[in-house]
Image 1 (cartoon, helix red, strand yellow):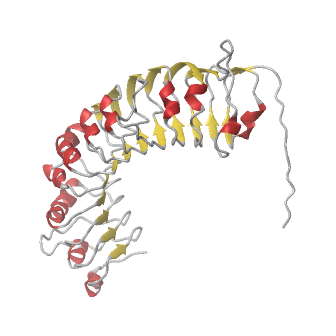
Image 2: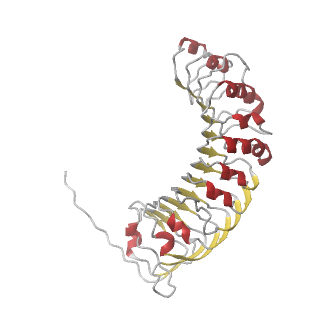
Image 3: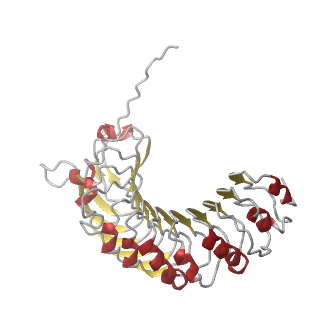
Length: 349
């Protein structure tokens, strides 16, 4: 679907929400002027709309705009920043999505003045650490960010301690970058965190026993993604204290050592467990000599997906393991026979 002119929007002065995502607006060269003439507009969604280069107008910016989604349009820094910064000065933007564009170079300091932002997605652009950290540190310390996505962003170096200042943060995605070094201790200050995604980086070092130990013991982390890094050492038993955890994803690292009942038995809400491509062994029966076995899955969520491939699991495979909804035990050293039972329940009606 194509729309070449948005002048008709001026006839809708009371419109509060507008979503033209996926519509070809490549010929609507005056789209910003049309938006600026909508005084009641609070939400604007123009993702993947092939937006043209912006014809700049600094007059009559929509002061009521709270949600703005311009993702997937190939917008460049020079084409979007002037209009955007004028918008910042006149509105109280809460949600901003500029992901999957062509932003590059340095980000102006004006970004640091967006203290009303709760949601910021800049993923999939060509910006680098040197372009984001100066303004972001100011934003981190003064805003009420709940959702921050800087994935696929060309970030490098270590994760700055300043991320720990975002104490309101519930979602942090720094995946698919080139971040190095150890996980900063400042992450312990993110007591409202629900989802942490650090996969596909070059993070190294040990997972400290208190690497996610919130100071007031209120952390209710739901999803933890640390896969495809270079983490080593053992899996800390403190993982088992994250009782709200639903996803534990740490494949393709260099973890080794024993995983015991203390690691897993407190995770009753766990739905997705991926520890594949490490060098882990399992000892769930603590009163026995070291014996590599697997946990009784009847204790976990009925829809658990488990990937334990490419580890050091040995011995026989317990029948309870087949309670998993999805299961991969390949490339281990199991022995003995496999006994599978199929129970069919007749249902009427």
